[in-house]
Image (cartoon, rainbow, N blue to C red; front, side, top):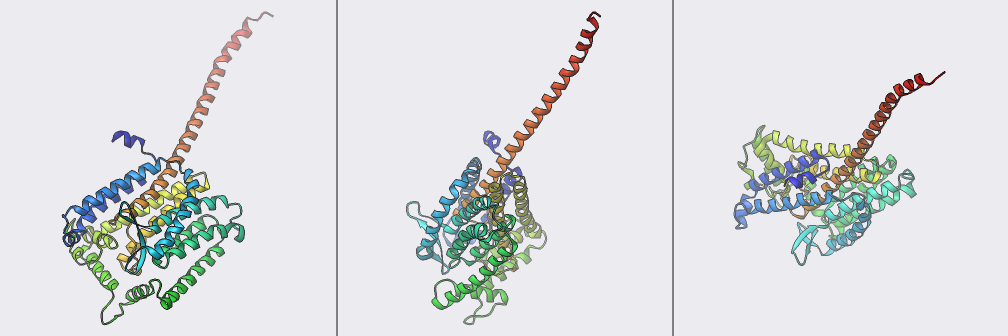
Length: 416
């Protein structure tokens, strides 16, 4: 274990944030899965052990990925993106359906399901980091600079949106932030935002007319968020979820009810995934909820420091892009829990119960730490070189001072 810790590099604060989030995840998942275990006829600790194994493998993935030189991901970016596009198309038409949305595919041999959008997000940000770094000289030009980085964003969002509009909108927004950081003209980003709004409206009406997509679900969620319009004499499921989440938050107060003492976990749908943040507030209060927000913001701040220190554009864009999408997803999940935005179905990264989603998040964190490790090594080499030069200069000055008396004595013995 000590050897493993000695080999661990990268930003130590980010490592600390990830480990703390993992411990919080174990406590929250164990507390919120009691009724699920009862319904599924499982042992009370079944989901705790499962989450422990998933998080353990996630930490190993972070360790393995952070040992890889981040420049190698530039070579993998295009390959991963080319693989992700056919997988998104396959998922859209033949994927596993849940709540009228086709988001998952099942791997035949190991019987594991995963969201292809997770792979697409990772591949897209790797590709954007590569293309943005290559196009910095012409990035202000619409045709030569902006269009090449815009095409993969539009294609990915179009393939994700019919089944998972919230993820597509989140992806478009975070890509716009990365474009702004990458010195793309603001008017070009504004055109992208306008095109995204028009595209979402068109998608809604096309889905409404053709029945392909989730227009009815989107409409119901917006109505529920606006005030809970009744449908067939009953309010939508989203209203019930939000009501139970509000009760959980009200129960928590300032200091919370204590670990394992949540009441709403037995009434709130999906308290272990989409609405795990409200359970955390119920058990640990506003103090616990604020601590979660602080941890994600701390992760983002440390990633921004890596971005500022990285001497190469690819690594800088890679670190900030992956961290922004992770933190923005967390903020959206928490906003849903406190009823600031409509229900989206996004999970809380590294805390919600999951499998492949945690592992893809772990890959992203590992890449950020890989960039950090490389930056630290470069700065260490620079400091060592600077120290070496200072020592050499001091040695030269010492030698010169030692030679001065010798020269004086030599002059004294020379005959006139």
